[in-house]
View 1: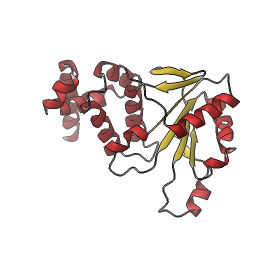
View 2 (view 1 turned 90 degrees about the vertical axis):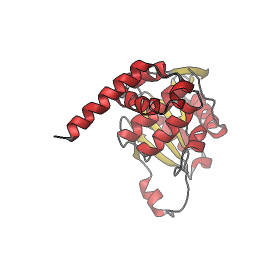
View 3 (view 1 turned 30 degrees about the vertical axis):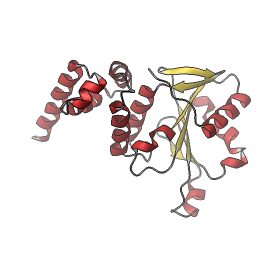
View 4 (view 1 turned 120 degrees about the vertical axis):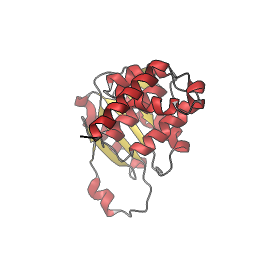
Length: 217
């Protein structure tokens, strides 16, 4: 499992929250390392995951920073919603504004301690979370873009499929991941490079066949 480092601006936000809320355990990550894989995503998103009772306080801590005035804020226990939508709508639609997503999480499975009470997700956890958010239409990231990011990291050999499957199952996406691995396994090169286990390829084939049967109803 590979943990991602924090981008400078993400690190600054994490330290701000940790300094004001030293007893709050939280995880942070962003899309900066995904950017080379995206085709249409130009806005970075910084994710802060914490207990639901601390969501609004974390947002207040960040909003007090004058340097964050151009950020879009998303906040929510499950599906995040923009909290400064009126301000955002009044601005030019051509502007590219980074976003801060503050979302509730019940556990920090798949994260490692970075410093003090700050945790950073593994790369495997991050790509599965991105797929989950896109499939459930929680954030303005398309499934196509999330898949592009996933396959980009997978082809680089930076993801462990066994851990991906365990975490995807926790996120109720094990079936979807197996289908993706099956389709990649058909290409051969990706399967060899990332050592996709045959059992994932076989289960993915079965899931895809079941979907095809449903389409015939």
